[in-house]
Amino acid sequence: MIATLLCSLAGGMLLVLSVSRIEATASGWVRLIGIVALAASVGVGVWSIMRGAVASGGLGLAGGMTALVTAVMAAAVIVVAPVMNAKPAVLRVVAGAGGVFGIASCCIWSMNRGDSSVAVSLLNVVGQLLGSLLLGSVTVAWLLGHAYLTATEMTIAPLRRLAGLFALAVALRWAFLLICVGIAYFAELTGPSSGGLATTLAGAWLIVSLRVAVGLLAVGMFAYMVWDCVKLRSTQSATGILYFASVFVYIGEISSQHLAGEIGIPL
Image 1 (cartoon, rainbow, N blue to C red):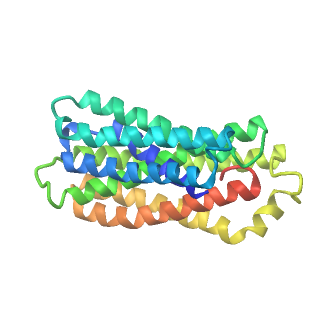
Image 2: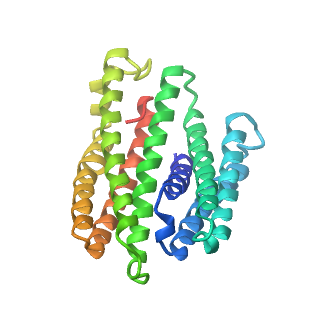
């Protein structure tokens, strides 16, 4: 679960960076994103080697190797960052490639739970992609908000784009949750030992509450508040809200990973 979350974070950050207004931002902010993504992906790669997942082959090998490739792309972002204003396209390609590998890694780790159902695997892939977008957008946004404290010459345009991506990610996560609940209810994808979707969710009521109330409802309100602050060009207020929103997003996505293991589908 932790490996999946870290790969999701690293891949999401790099993917969001690739579509950000990097030409209007400070190179220090870009390097910081690369450092965080590098630390997360290297941590997963080293953990998978120490755990023996790579040596055992199969999905463990694929997950560990893609995490290490993500680390290489993150390191390249750190190197390319100083010249990003001259060649922003290069940085976008490198960051985008790292994002793809990072999300692929978290999808592989999510499939390593033993469920071979094609439908469940497809749901997991979509869920990990949307989770990566949410984790990446909120993390990259609050790091950019913090950068405004020192790089006062930056325009509001980069933060406006990230605030929009954050709001979009929250909306897509909500839609995906409703779709998954509907599929699980009608197609009975909650597992052979389940007593029904309602019974399964009731048994994990605390995690479900964290997922919905903290990870989606509260995050949705924060996304609206951030967008409102950005419209008023209040970067400090937006950054403060993003700090809290990021904690709620992390809690919500950890809960989602836990529920995916318990129920069999991502929520």
